[in-house]
Length: 248
Image (cartoon, rainbow, N blue to C red; front, top):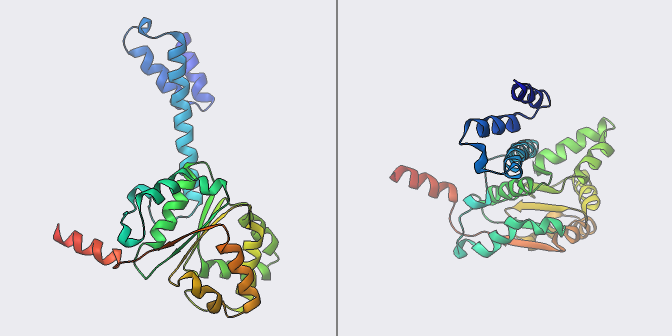
């Protein structure tokens, strides 16, 4: 009777995994096979693992990642500009600790957005906050925020994100206000957090494409400094996946 009361207290304390582990141990082989310390460790580990899984799921959900992606699913091929050693380095998330940026360039369909999403997902699994945003959506939200006096609050929110992924950088020419907004975001994050950029344009083309030498200098300096540059090559991965699915 007492153990049932204890289990109910665990549930009331919102420890369902601990309660389930306790019940499983009670219903398993005789308890003398495990010491008290071992049983306690199993029970606590079950609750810890369950809560950690929920935290990771919540961080991934809040990151607004556009597609289900993981670094394990990234196709490593030197011909594509990706090798296993680089992916292993990214998996450790030491680049986040070092506040390093990652700049991913390549033609349409080469997997830029997928890699950016996978980096955000990996950061979430390591306990960091991430956010995946398309540049067109970012500049639109900042323009609306400026008009509603929420501009400073959004900049502060973005500055607190550990890994911020900007997808489709320079997909279209940027207006003067958009360039300045982007600079404000990058200035707040410089040397404090990590920014991931995906773009169809190679990094050497970013400066002229920004079409304002002064702002371009400031933006490129904050992005390229202390950054890993990934130049994806090869045919479209979308076409390849379609072709392989047809074959099977």
